[in-house]
Image 1 (tube, helix red, strand yellow):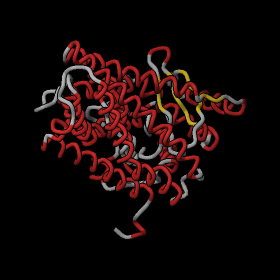
Image 2: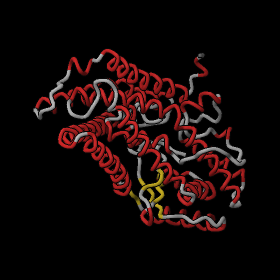
Image 3: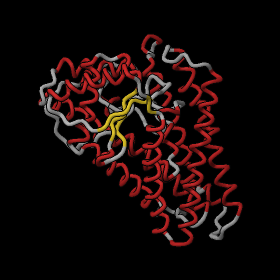
Image 4: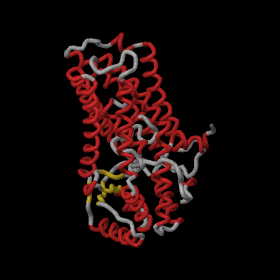
Length: 385
């Protein structure tokens, strides 16, 4: 590949491939050679060594990803003029987030181990369900904590909502949140009457009224059509089923540290399978929303312009080879959006929601993918359409 072809998007893609590939390789070798069973405790009795061994695992996870995080969170954004943040500022935010995430991994692992010893696989499964629920609440509360309000933003949102009203689209609650990373996209949080569309502050400041109305309407349609709920449900079930399957691997289980780490290694491979298959469901949902928007009367040119503005705040990759998009990108490129009817199973944002929910199972791939490696703001709410 020539230097001229190494765009920001392609550089991040290669970085994500290397980060994910290295973790998948480590876990595969560990499973094949039975390394957890040789190096870690196989005792089913409670001991302080359980906590110490799992803590070492969490620290090794931070250490292994640190070079990838440096490149993805600081070096590449600086190189391609995507960030003006100083290294010291990024480093403080990064270590605080990395330690916080690893601490949660450690808590979830200890809960799974403890309940697995007390109540068997059913107890461990209940803790995975609890962990997924906790992640959902954490995302919800963290977004609401970052909420900002100003008179100018309220006026612009009101004008956008009036335009959406002319398209006859119901819009749930909306909040605008502060952020540092230009790639932060917001999303949807909560459910039922508490469901809320999250919009980045930069979008309100830089997008036109019509573009802002379009991106809000997209999320409103994802919510109204049930695609948002399908994404949440499928993402949760994907992780839960994967965890159960991986406990049945040789030497895996939930009653000792060695068995649990074997389960975690297997779950990493399951998450990798999700990276290859779930993006299709996410892309289908995005394209179906495009078509639904056009059916509500939103001009095709406006849909494409809004997608292009969104893309420029991300990696700036207007088109990409079809095979690369099929494997690595749950968000369709601007060049693929044509608002024609899209068939096939669809669940909005399922691929990246599944990555976030994998925290409950010590999901090491959750922040190693190209879109969020080294970018703490995008760990709890990965970039979406």
